Structure formats: structure tokens, C-alpha cells
Amino acid sequence: MSETSAETPWAFGAAPDPEDVLAGVDTRVPEGVDATGLAELCLALGDDALVLAHRLSEWCSNAPDLEDDIALANVALDLLGQARLLLARAAAADPGLVGRLVPGLPAGSPALPEDALAFFRDPDAWHCARFVEVENGDFAHTIARLAVFATVRLAAFQRLVEHPDPVLAAVAAKAVKELAYHRDHAGRWFLVLAQGTEESRRRLLEGLRALWPLHDELARAYDLDGARAEAEVVLDQLLAVSTVERPAVAPYDGPRHTDDLTRLLAEMQSVARAHPLGVW
Amino acid sequence: MTPTVTPAEIAGAVRDPEMPMLTLADLGVLRGVEERDGEVVVTLTPTYSGCPAMAAMRDDVVRDLAAAGWTARVEVALAPAWSSDWITERGRAALREHGVSAPGPAPAHEGPVPLRLLPTARALRCPRCGSAHTQLTSEYAATACTALYRCRDCGEPFPHVKEV
Image (cartoon, rainbow over the protein chains, first blue to last red):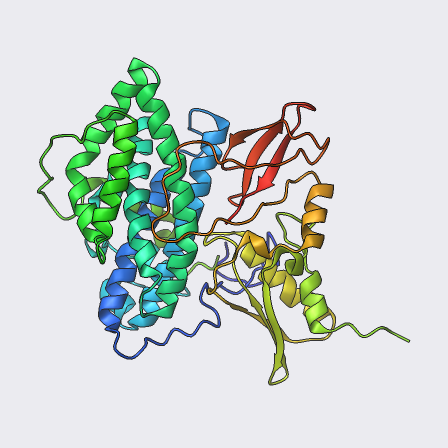
């Protein structure tokens, strides 16, 4: 990182220009599509991906074995990529978005819109679901969250492939392939933990029960064009094979965001905020 | 006489930083090379949403074209989404020569993607000894685009490029 020079040696040679993930993509909002609504939708979908990517990346070097360390990091990387595209799409669709949501962005900031939204936005301006915010818990909790999240998101993204905005539709088409791998990977672990030892099953049930009050909010956020019904069917398949019941707990009714998100962002944003004019 | 190398050949010959046995043309990410207002515009498509190799590919394309005297920039094409089916035959042979198993046909979906709780069934051979006696270790290997297998005959682990 450098605050003074563009000549700083970097992994690929000289420091590159900031990479625009939508370079050359036609980001004009099609006629008949509400640009503000599109931006809000992309922001919510991007925020969920970014926050869960961060949570999953916390497993890096801490997972039960090397393979799963790498698997969770790769899932995190996919979600981070989806987040970058979706935040960039949100900012391009609604040019006033960054100004409204990131009023504290320092003058002369070189940050791309996606970075401004990720690293300089206060917690109350995030649109993510609390389901992805809460801390990881143990491996079983992480697997339960990923299995449910990927199931819900996959069903919604399959519908977004038909979205009238071609940029969101293209991002969704790519993400569907990734989410299918995430869901199946987490689903297999879910089954293994449910049918493994008494201890693994106890931990899985505990993780699922801890997350379940936040499931309804997540499911509603992704209920695009009947996606929820489809996601619930898949979830029931997974639960049935695993002989696990849906936890009988009421939906959580509390503040829009958790303190866990505040702590996550404080850590994630600390370097960028300490060097607000830094070039990466 | 100096052979004329076109911008398309230069861009197509750039190598994937993570799987350097593959050129961008063989990987199937090179979607277009055209001259526009005295500038070469190269269109690339990402393999995965978060593929960190994209930035390196972009910089390498611009650098190699600049070395040949071209001003170039890279644009992104998001649609249609990259498929492992786009890896060329030459690319598949290069993967195998370097101990990487090439992908089978990408799955085609109509309607909801079915939940698969059994290990993905793939008929593949060890790229080292040719044995069909292989075992999946993990669906995620050193890169997001590969799964990790091991050969139960020669005992060696090997990556397999996943079908997407």
C-alpha cells in the first residue's frame, strides 16, 4: 500500500489501476426498471455476500482440517466476488447511492464505489440480514448457516437470472453455479454431522437452533417470485435426510442489526479508515 | 521476414497465472480482441465471480500488448457465464500433461438445481498413471475452480478442474 507513489512494487509488477469489475460493461439501467429499487436489491444481496464472506474467512487456518479450511476460504472467495459485482452494480445503477450511504467518505478518496461502500459505511447503513452477521460459533454452526444461506440464495438467484437488468441477470447466472457447489458442500457436511457422533449431532442441532430465529428474516429477503417455497422444499429434504426437525423457536424481533456486525465492520474497515487516502 | 503477430494472438497466448499450462485462449476466457480508435480492446470473462487471477490476466494482457507496441485495455464480459466446456482440446491435453484432471461436461439444469448429498460422480482417470481407481478428497482444492482427488493406485493427489 502506498499513500504517495504509484510506482510501488506490487505482486504483478507496478501498482495497477484500481480494478473495475464492471469495466466495459454497459451499466445503463434498462427502461422500465426502477434504478433506486435495483440498487437497493443489489446492495442487500451484495452486503449479505460480503458479510458472510468475512465470517467464512475467519475460519482460514482454524478449520477442523486443511481441506475444509481451503473449502471455506474458497466459498468465501466466491461470495466476495459476488459482493464486489453487486456493490459495483448498485453504485452504477444509482449514482447518488455512495453519497447518501457513505457521507463520511473523505474528500479526494481514491476508493472505487464498491470499496467506499465496503470500507467507509457505518453499520446502520448496511442492508444485510442478521442471519449472516452473527459470529461463527463452532464448525457445526458455520455449516448449518452456510447450508441454509446457500439454499435460500440459490433459489432466489435462479430467478434473478431472468431479471430485466442484464447486469444483475449475468451476475446471478454466474453465482448460481457457485451457490450450487456451496449448498451441496455444506449439505454433505450437515448430513455427516447429523449422522456422525452424538457430539457432532448435538453441536449441529445447537447451531441450527441458535440461527433459526434469524431464518425468517433471511427467507423473506430472498423470497423473489416464489423462491422461498422452493428453498423451503430443499431445506426440508436436507432436514429429512438428516433426521433433523425445524427448531421450534419464534422469529427474532430486535434491532435491525446485531452488535456482531458492528464488531465485524470495526475490524474489516480499520485499515482502510486509518489510511483513507491509501492506494492499494 | 518477421512474422506478423496479431493482437489476438498476443492476448490469446497470455497464460493463466494459477494454471500456467493454459493460455487465456485455451481456458476459454478470451471473448474478443478488436481495434477501436487506435486501441486494442480485449474482452475477458471471469471464470468465477471472485477469481483473483482476473487482475493478473488483465495486467498481463495489457503488458504483453504494450511490449508489442499496442495500447490496450481490458473489458469484462459477464454474460454468458464462463463454462468449463469452453476449455479447448489443446487446453485439456495441457492440463493432463501437467498432472491436472480435465473437466467432464458441465451439468445442464432445467428448473431447480437438485440437492446432491452424495459425492459428485465423475468418471475420471489419474493424470499421472491413468488409473480409474480414484477418490474425491475435497470439492475445493487450491483454487475455487478445482476439486482435490487422489489416485488409489499410484497414491498421488491431483487436482480436477470442476464442471461449471
